[in-house]
Amino acid sequence: MKRKTLMFAAVILSAFTWTQAQDKKEEKKAPAKSAILHPEMTVESGTWAKPMASIGTKPAQPWTATTVAAGVNNMPQPGRPITVVGEIVDFSCYVQLGKHGEKHRSCGQKCVQNGQPIGLLTQSGGLYMLMPEEHDPRRDGGVDAKASASDHMGHIVEVSGTEASVGAYRAIYVQGLTK
Image (cartoon, rainbow, N blue to C red; front, side):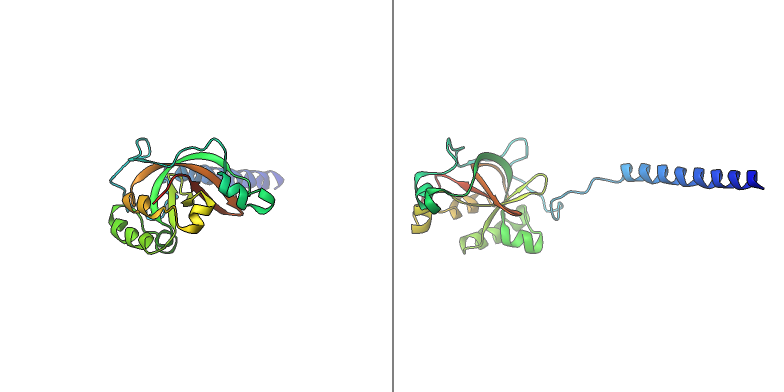
């Protein structure tokens, strides 16, 4: 009796192990899901390997003099120079509706021209908010990211600037976006 119970347990264990192995094979065969919302909304200008344009310059120092001067005790939050390739998106429509790409270009252009935030969507699905770096000119209206965002809405571009983050929020502050 003990022997039959042991054999029965071995058969059950073998069947369970085989089922688990089959499940893992099926997982490997399943197509990889994109982290980008609605990947069917495609980009027609620029590729991840060959971006259509470059926006901003990689700064030697994270922050300009006006940003340092505006910081609490002349110390802005930490930042680091960065260059990222991504699709220019209307941050609002992307987060709320998943819209991007060529089919959303004209809507995205209108949205950013009317004050909606600008985003940079990376190939891995990461999303940065884009804004001008220079603090005083940004505050006083001397720099504007709307023109470059509108020109390249729905295009894959390379963006250089200073990356800063707070919690889950990430931004790239771009130098040189003068009006």
